[in-house]
Amino acid sequence: MSMSSFNFRILAIFLLSTMLACTAATATPAGIPDPALDAPLATVKGAQTAIFAGGCFWGIEAVFEHVKGVETVVSGYSGGEAKTAHYEMINSGTTGHAEAVQITYDPSKVTYGQLLKVFFSVAHDPTELNRQGPDTGTQYRSAIFYVNDEQKRIAEAYFNQLNQAKVFGQPIVTEIAALNSFYKAEAYHQDYARHHPRERYIVIHDLPKVENLRKQFPQLYVKK
Image 1: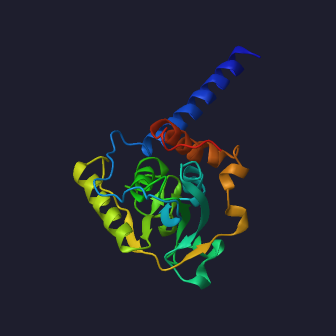
Image 2: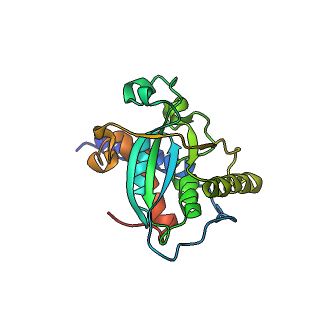
Image 3: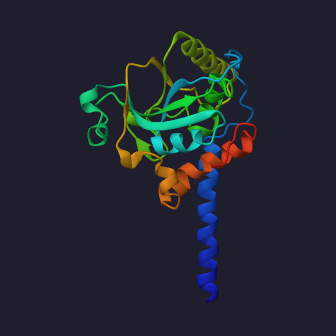
């Protein structure tokens, strides 16, 4: 290998590392507090549902699949009508849908507030309006679709807590709305990051989020 080729290779590695670091930093604010308002851990095993949206659902799904107490994560669409819950139509940004994930979790192992902390801190950047990284459009908006009044109270309280603490450099723009329906996405979207771990988009934008989860939440991280 010539010296010029070697130097080029070193430069390429450096640039890729920088891109990964920038992506990780964007979704990783320092000192994000625990929710002041949260539901206590349940005393018995159960199953509850949380619906979050924050950019391409591949990354959100990849993160929550590694959270303790999470049993299933399904990629899908929320915010619009059933007739437009198709990827080709959602890409127009005019359907009202957001790419979202449906998380089924055991409330005796993880609380809704803990899921919110992961969502705000490592799963995405809640200060980006109608976009996330390279993806733009209302379908990539940050949103919490609550399924009951308790989730609404906890989500709104944490939203206000983080904004008042000015944890992020910019105001949080996450939408908090009642869940109307969740529509499962096409089969090829499910577990996309797990099936395509070497794809450039996954390597640059999604794997750093999972790594941040492992580093910041060792008590919640589950290797799979």
